[in-house]
Image (cartoon, rainbow, N blue to C red; front, side, top):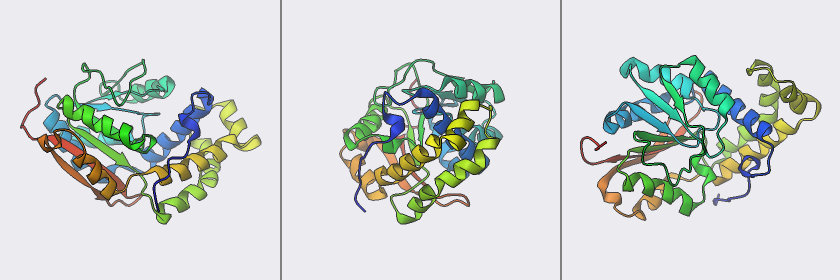
Length: 263
């Protein structure tokens, strides 16, 4: 199927912040509970090593995705790993909860961070989890180009592909929301209200999930995107799909060819 860049509610500026945050809470809960990103841990370890400062700079973090579980895996090989959370619409409550679980590992940026213009002060292995599909092709290329221009390694991860197989779970996501909401913390009265009495959350998560599938870039599209980047040959690129027990994770990684990045 062709790529369709229809709207997602969480991208709209007028969309209520609390509802956007409840969606990112749901995604974080699922990613951590099912250890969704375990198949890409070797890619993350390699990127951290190349960054040269044991730091991951996570872009478009949402509610923190599966980074709590990812951090546990990484600390086995990189005990001093640091992960900086950032977003254009930072979910500060979720960031603070994530940091509270591992205060020696997590930091976060309170101000909005534009994925296409990452501040030069943020040096490290740039990552994006379940967010690259939010960007149109020219914007997506700008994200990668910015990493090249600043000689910072980068990796993109998506928990779905543009396939019927990935679409089916999205169609049943309202049921998943209904079943998992009682276990999501912290407890919020309006989360319960807008899940069970006025089911706004299950319906908009289903819509955004379906559109996410339609927006997701294929391996072929990502490879073509790389070829259109200026100085793309200065990086070693890898694009593929890591097979996992919970989900298959699509990924793109770009590592500068020099051994250690200048900081």
